[in-house]
View 1: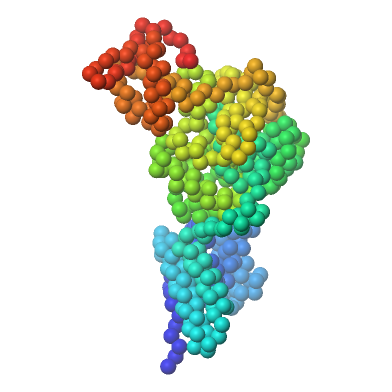
View 2: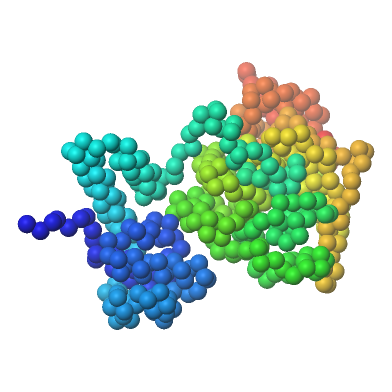
Length: 486
């Protein structure tokens, strides 16, 4: 009686390879689901390896390049020559179901591995051999099965192991400002200069190891995801910033102008694969909102999973993330530092920098960098800089901030108070109850903080407070002169 054929689906393997021949751009995502060793047929493994080689060498996957790669490795004749590659293409009518084919290939590989582990365990037991080797294989199988199902390995360790681990050492990309292996936020109003700060940092990391007025930064490869403008505009910025430094645009700074949704698991897996393949130590998202399309950035339920995903990647492979983000608008320039959206954004990051500027209508106005949050260190002193631009170059000129020039950072009570004032002023004909204002502005602070803000509101002459039974209503006084919010 012939031996039974191990779990496999050759048709699914052929359809998967044919789908990539039809739509080569799919390979970069599918490679996060399938590995070469998952294929049952050796010929299909060789084809997959050749495709991966083309991807890594930044070549297009097509009939000619694939046949050439297989011929170079000496495998083309063994798989059946160019005709077999053509057959894969002709036998696959559409690439729409490529992910489904990939999952079938992965599942069959999972079952073959399970069968192998179970067989080894049974043989060791029957032959009364030590189970150590088989148990080791079983442990490796469970790790690989987690990867097969798209679940990352859990980070669990004793306190002793944690404290002895070198990966736990606190390090900085830029001392006291950008934490290595963490999530860092640079926030500001439009044209505040936040992208220039991030770009200057990226160029410094990818070239000389100096940024922000010759401050030392860790050198490494930077992956810059940019969706906040055209690639032509970014090209101009890079050329001018590099010209002011007297250097060529660095090869270790890689830009990605493609859409990416950090809320979609498959796209996050593809991102993780790209980070690993490129050996990128820093990943920048400019601006953050563009990489979570359709998400409600005020919702903790939507923001928290995305921030947790970035944290998981940072913890497991040491990637440093820098998120460029916007601030809420406000009637007072002092309020423009606040991070827009859910409180979980600011709560999830390790460092947060706020960039303000004196005159948003002047390209050369003085900017101030405020350390809004530093989780593991004392906040550094504020910095100031100007953007000096000519037809050929752009340079960031930094200066020390005098004590008299420090930008005062308002507390949470002042933030809530200012928001309510702005909201009431925008709707002067309406009166609101306290709970209506809290709901409209999505205020998530503690009850004590909210009460203190409303206490200030009760004593403000610009607000008409009316008693309605057991509650107050609030309305903007139309005759109040237009004065800046405190």
